[in-house]
Image (tube, rainbow, N blue to C red; front, side, top):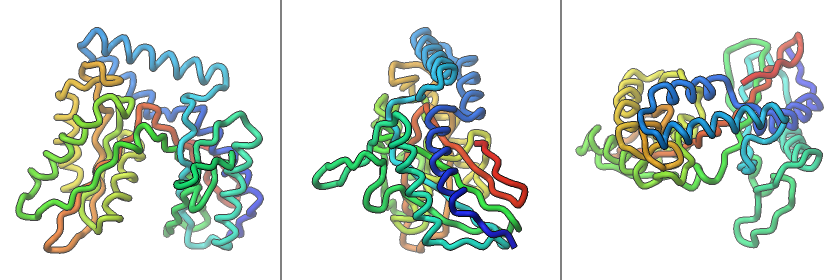
Length: 292
């Protein structure tokens, strides 16, 4: 059994927020390199070049990749032989999140939904968002931090499609959403698509899809097939980097699926912007390792 030191969780929650805001994951950098290599539009090529330079300058100067520190999301996966107090775990994460904002020059983007009051901690009612899941892995606990910016989050959709309309309704809805978003999501994006479940689960699946690493594939064979088909089509729409035209509308389309009701066919779309930030801490008996 592995007992988790909650002071380490707090420190990790703090460090992960800062790390995610300053370091772009390697798979996203590779995604930029690929799009830059195949971009045929002169304006699109220029915009991609500016984005790539911005990433390099930010990292070289230990600065933020984007001024939007986002809504803080923490995904926790607890291994089978890990002992931890779940309530205190969530408290530690929230404390670490608030410390990151107070102890570093981070803009707090979190406000009360009615009064719009900002506590300047990046925390509030039900924020940070904390998802907890479990794994058969033995003595391992992971904490993933995702700062989700409003530019991409504002472009979220849910449609309770008619089952009889089939896969074509799903594809049409996704394409329509990408076109409606245009440049507002700061493309190139990762287009997250949730299919199935209930309305709330479907939206959650689309967020999971949007924040997956590039190069990962949906575990459901039909979902993986839909990913390939939509990824091939999206970059033919001409939206392009920052919505200024070209071939680089999206790094990829990611799909996550869940079983649903015989009279339902929910489909949701959530997008991640080109600054697809995330960071991860892995706790094992030998210590804490940071990565993406």
